[in-house]
Image (tube, rainbow, N blue to C red; front, top):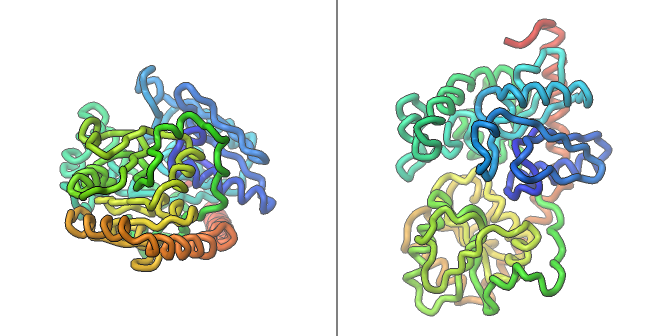
Length: 410
């Protein structure tokens, strides 16, 4: 497993890598994880899985105050060197990469080497911002000038040219090297333009057992309201619809509190009467907040590649009000496990919130249905074999390529 960050870093991608590694190890595979060393923390150990920390030149350029180090869409010299050491030690059959850290593996890729599988958790194959969002709408596709203008707001003037040039110039190289793409939803496959020339299969994220309830008296849970509340969890950003939600919530009459859990990128705009922006919490405490909530909200404006928050809410037996965009529609069944609304439209979101708040029987029925669907459709037993089958396909493709081309890949 090759991931740019790992626990204790909190995020959907990090949890996916950890859960998949645990499941594969339990099924008899030897598993190792290589991940970037993050500021101030060491990667958490995983029983039965070897975890390697990789240095990065980007971390030195980012400075001492960086909160998190991200892999660039180009080879990082120190990461390349450390990764070669790990590869020599582990001698894997398959390298399963997650996100842009794959670019630091490509200099070591050889036709006769391990099969290369790349999970697509977002739109980073073709989009420098990974969101494929431009002017509040799904972008029509990459272009050098368009991407430069769009990405500068996210990366700043200094980093944008490197990130844009790296993403756009290396797309075809990635397509040549990767033996199998694993997009996490049909939306990702479509918007990343995977077609007849690409080997891919859709591999949705799965969810296992949620962490148990924390010890009684956990002080960090004191920030939660004692009364029933509505929950938003994830980065508190405009593209995830947090500002849209805050503005719509302000128009509700006598609504229960709205709790926002996650890094607050809205600042004071998220601080309104009735709203508790508690900041990020460890994953077990976030899940405990979810259990205590009335329901969850995922009001994304961008095309969520998957929407892990919706799956976690379902597993906890909670219904959700979610935008009908991207991969969220693969998880939420309208009228059965939650309510889907058009993204960015205040009226439908307000109506859905009012309906869910005012109907306890509806919440109970949808919560039960959501839990049942999560346990059957998105269980490890249903989805991990699909990943294993993907590995076999990738290995077969790599062996066929090695038989025909004994030289290195271009």
